[in-house]
Length: 118
Image (cartoon, rainbow, N blue to C red; front, side, top):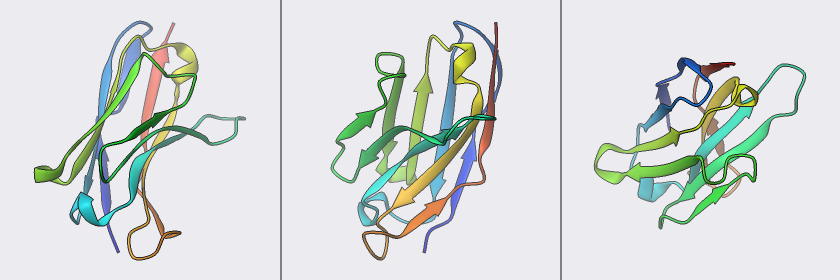
């Protein structure tokens, strides 16, 4: 199993930046993928970005060029740097870890609110 602790959400003006952190309770080398989904009211949950155990990344088209996901294996942590934020980025951001003990194992963080004011 793995526990995920998120931090870094908040309120920011459009065009501003925020950095989300997600700390895992085990080595990132033992986790196939880590990343973030986001959930906004009235909208489907959306995969924002992920990074795998060898550092390959994926971004949703809606955040490409604005968001950057990275990892720090020494701290068992993954980060999401969010720049040029837009009002449509407002959502609860949920950190996840996929493929811990089995390929389909998925664990979730507690979620952090990101609110972008226009």
